[in-house]
Image (cartoon, rainbow, N blue to C red; front, side, top):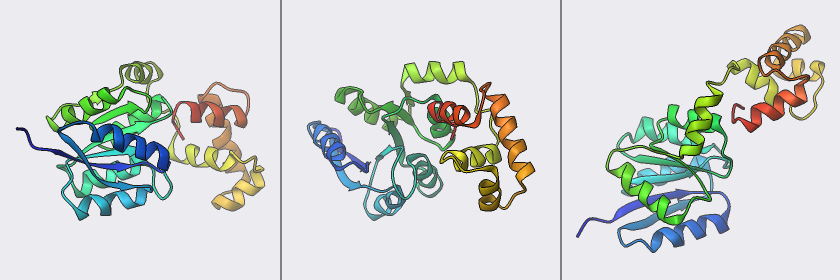
Length: 204
């Protein structure tokens, strides 16, 4: 009989987390040995007990699933990481792979597919949602620099250039230039559209 695969599940929505744990618990060779609701609790939970595979939601308080994946890759490189997302954003896929994730799946995938992904990554292979993979290739790399992303994120609440400049310790002219460049790169008309497009593609 094959050994049981020990899984750490990180998901901030308790109903979703419990449902995923219940579905995986139906598999004879998979056991959910730890559950956390915050991204900044993932590493400690993985260190506290033997874990083979970590299932990480992307959007969690404390730290994102992508940040948690990167921390696991640095500290526990033998641990396999599966990133789950509600949002099929190509930029998230690219970021997850760069962080060292072994698999990237959307949450509405069938339970059997998730269980199969757990077994597959443990065998040393990668699993990527094919639709997202195609979209990521079509979209290409994130064209925004780190500073442009930072300013767009800060501008999402409607702050003025003066407010952004004060918050980010930059001149208003510098803020205006970064916003203008980001708007041009994304081929949109204004900052609101730039924020929307960048979010939809998972670039923020």
